[in-house]
Length: 381
Image (cartoon, rainbow, N blue to C red; front, side, top):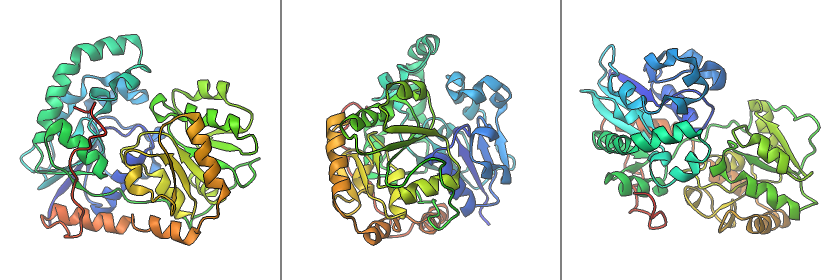
């Protein structure tokens, strides 16, 4: 049998990348999982069922609390990673560092995005960082970019989540990536638990509360929709500021359990997201429950949302345009069966079969290829 090892940047949060890693582990259940940092309390509990092997920097608790503090140690940590035993194939799950491992094995990289904080989104990310970290980044960034580009070009196979990201990868690295959309993992038939005090028919926003997610624009849009209620799921550095600025018809529920999240999807009128997403998993999660979405006309949403079938678009993350899109969303009747059929295309079994085929060296013929660089992202270079 082919011996497989999986490498992921860090396991310190619950996000779409971590969900993809869990599916990779389903596809290769015997594979050890190497990572720089592992904080079981802040990531998905399912990782405890696997052979997780954190690196030496994991011993520093401050890094596990905030992975940004470990910059610029990640290149050193991943560059020194050694496998025991040596695998035949290494799958790198990366948006910044895991693709930098050095190995004689065949290297398959699944890239969620070139590191935004190194390239076109650096100003938005750095604005939320402490002054000392910004100064350190400014000094180290040229070396980090050079290391990152060398790491990308060392892969034998380069995969990504959407044509939008494939364009960014080509612009940054000169590498043509194969598109393998992430799997939809939400179980629409699973247990549900009502969120206390919440009536049905609300609008829903599920996002990490960081500046680049543009949740503030969504919150401000509700000022002109007094008859609607918005429920915001998620935590992050913007949590306190957003709560302070929100109108009365916006409710923040923080992090919720999986049964509560299923209840929120099942009982909302629709989902809204104003972020530029490389892939955008939450619209597909909402679609699995037959719920339409209102999303920014950009990035991965262009590939996962069908206008008029599974949702509506707005052209910029401005409160006025978001409010107008939400009015269109709630004013029409949606075909829930058609919305769910759209979500069913992104199934977990298909993802695992295609990934196993790539590891075996025979990717399925039906896998879509990457498109040319996206001219809408001129800053990504």
